[in-house]
Image (cartoon, rainbow, N blue to C red; front, top):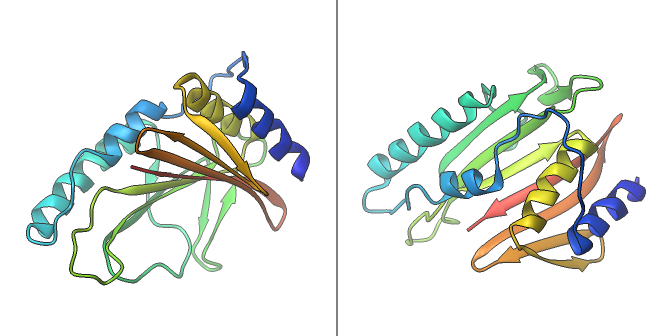
Amino acid sequence: MKKIFTLIAALACFGSVWAQKAIDIMPVDEIFDVITFRYITLANEEADAKAAIDNYVKHFTAYGYTHELVGEGYGGPCSIIDGFYKDGVNDTNNYTFVPEPYSYESNVVVITACNDGGEGDYGYLSISFDIYSEDMALILTEQLTKGEFAPEIIEDTIIMRKDNKCVTINESENGDFVSFLFEISE
């Protein structure tokens, strides 16, 4: 399992010329445009959240995502908890995502705006991609490297930063599948 993580770590640290397959992935710059489209305030929560939702729905559906939350256990003090998936099945009986075998594009996206129950604003969106393809993970990591995100490796986690932008990358096993979790925030 950690062989793939090591490959991603090497790519993040040293860069690479990766022969991209025809994978329809949202570019990193566009992901950050979606995140920073609207700052969600406590005072104007409903209008801010609606504008942010309308914007990210437009972007993710343009890349062929199905707009449906996958899994369970979501909650807490959040203005937005939403999700999308691509190239797989939302198994509603088991509250899980089953990636399409041999797909280069199977992934789940979770979008949140939370303020941890405080009196402050919700802020910008946070987006996580649970990616089930080594190729797609490498392409996204290469985009970060080419975008001059500086990598830092702490134990089994890669943290890539550029200015106030941050991407945390972890590898995990989910039953029969290996996935890569990219948590992206401003």
